[in-house]
Image (cartoon, rainbow, N blue to C red; front, side, top):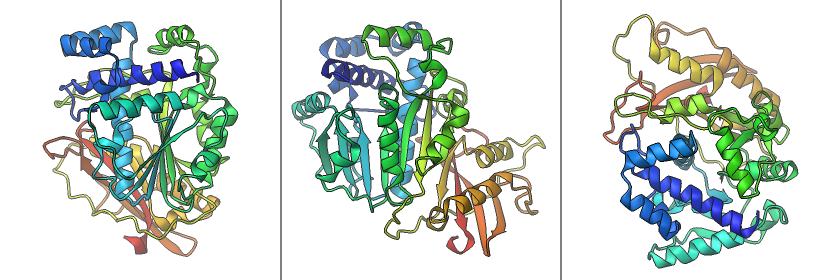
Length: 417
């Protein structure tokens, strides 16, 4: 991207994050306290003088789906980052970081983790100037690396700044892939796939249909007009049914691949469970894990405790429905693979995951909610477990309300339980 477009795109998204930070009618808010400092004076005035409902309606009128998309993407990336920190990652790489404030917002969670911020030189320089102006201390564990992906490979950019491909790493690639040629996207994913087993990448991508001109999706025409105005079209997309195969060719295994409906169900809910909007129909978000040529330094992933029994429910059991959806499709929650599962050869790994998806032999203790199962494969016993984690600020959990909980599916060998 050229410098003006790089800065304009990043500033527009910072404005959107600043706006949705004021949205209080959410089960879990999408908060970015620094976003307002990265926007121009006109944007700041707009945020300061406009009532939240007015801003929401104006944005949805101008670009339908933009308000919900900003909430969903911010929350999804935040949740994956926090989950991977708990799982023992040693490095985080922000690819095309823009005005991402996660190293500051999650300073405590990242305190023992090396963070590399890679971005366009113009955007990164402006970001650092603005951080100095608001007197925001830069954590000691951040390394800033200016790079243009169309001229330099990710591997070369990281090589001279202390990055280790032998350490378990999370790559966050937010709002970038669709602007890049396919060969560049493949190069980035190839590199991630060659990193330590268990490393992963989270990125959003446009659908192939949209890149090819199908703009009838929610917000599609409006986004296309804006892209034409700034002369920065989407050039890379994926056909969702082929995404897993595309990733597998890069030695990456899809953990989740969320479309508009999944994202709305997970993140666009009010405190009382009502829908608060929709998100773009042409952008999806995928989390993929490296099966790796390298083995990460041993660091066990903590096994979770079994779910407590839920109160009696009707025969039409929403808890079991949510659990089955996560187990069978790997959507509607998070999937965590233990070190032994990650270390399996690709075919064996795929077989274990396939058996989890197809599992039906629940015992009497798990027949009601389908939250735990065991099976044998290649001389070992494997198991899976689903637990609910709170997503509300008051710490409450509701197994039947996806707006208040995040489901976590852990797949492991039984001796790791």
